[in-house]
Image (cartoon, rainbow, N blue to C red; front, side):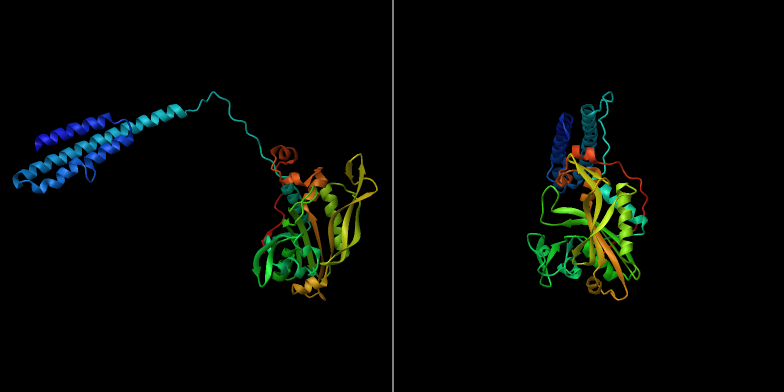
Amino acid sequence: MMDSIIVIKSEFSNLINDAENIEILEEVRIAALGKKGRITSLMKNLGQIEPEERKLMGQNLNILKQDITSLLETKKVELETASLNARLLQERVDTTLPSRPEELGTIHPISQTTDELISIFGEMGFSVAEGPNIEEDWYNFTALNIPVDHPARQEHDTFYINAEKDGQRMVLRTHTSPVQIRTMQKHEPPIRIIVPGRTYRCDHDATHSPMFHQIEGLVIDEATHMGHLKGCLIEMCRTFFGIENLPVRFRPSYFPFTEPSAEVDIGCSFGDGILKIGEGDDWLEILGSGMVNPRVLENCGVDSQKFQGFAFGMGVERMAMLKYGIPDLRTFYDSDMRWLKHYGFQPLDIPSLVGRASL
C-alpha cells in the first residue's frame, strides 16, 4: 500500500507539472481529489484495513492529499500568471498612437425650439404641465366640444388603439389639449400653463408627420380677456423670432374648443424662393388661439359664469422650420448625423424658469 502511495504521488506530480492550461489542471484535480478520484477512493477504503495499519495509512494518505493540493494550487497560480502576461502582451495600448477624434454632440432643433418657447412663456409666469400620450376619447375629443361626426375622429385622421375603456377605444392623442382638460379638473383657477409634448395624426408629407410636437397654452381666471391673449402671443412671436416690430395679426377662425377663435399670422415676404419673416406685405399662419369655449369649462367642472380664459397651440417643428430655415419636416426624423451637425445647437444657457407637473 505504501508503494502505491508513492507511485500515485509521482504520477499526479508529473501530470500537474505537464498541465498546459487551467482546464487540463482541473481535470487532473478531479482525477486525484474528486468524488471518484484515486486518492479519495483510497481514503474511503481505509475501513477495510486492519486497525494497526489503518492509522499509519491514514496519516500517509492525508500527507499525500496535502502535497497534491499544494502542487495544484502552485501550478494554478503559475498558469494564471502566464495567461495574464500573455493577454497583457496582446492587449497592450500603443501610447505613441494619436487619440481617437472626439466630436461634441449637438441639440436637436426640436429640443432647442421647445426650450426656447418654454423659456419665453416661463418669463410670462407659465408653468409646464405634462400628460399621457395614450388618451381616452373623452379627454381627446368630447371634453373639448369636438362633435361625434368631426373629421378628426375618423380613422383616416387619428390613430386608434383596439383596447377599449367603457366601450370607447383609446387613442394616440391628436393634440396636447387633453392635458388642459386634466389640469382644469385637478386644479382650481387661476391656471396658467403651457403643455409641450408629442402628438400623433395620420398624415405624412413635406410639412406633416405622423408624430410631431406641440406646445399649447391655457390661462383661466376671472379677468382674462382677448386683449391679454393678443398681448401674450404678440410678445411671444417677437421674442422668438428676434424681431422687435414683427407684424402680427389675428384672423377670425373656428375651433370647437374656443369661442371666439383666431389664427395668428406673422408678416413676411416671398421672393426668389426665399421666405423672409418680418418683411413685405405677405402673411404666414403660425398658430391657432381663442377664448376657451364655456362648454369646455363646464365639461371640466369650472363655473363658466365666473371664470374665463384663453388657449393657444402651435407646432414645434413648424416654428423651428420658420426660424431656422429648415425646408422639409421629414428630415427632423431621418437620424442623419450630417443634418444634425448642420442644424444642431450647442446647449442653451437658460436658467430653469418653470416647474413641471405631470397629470
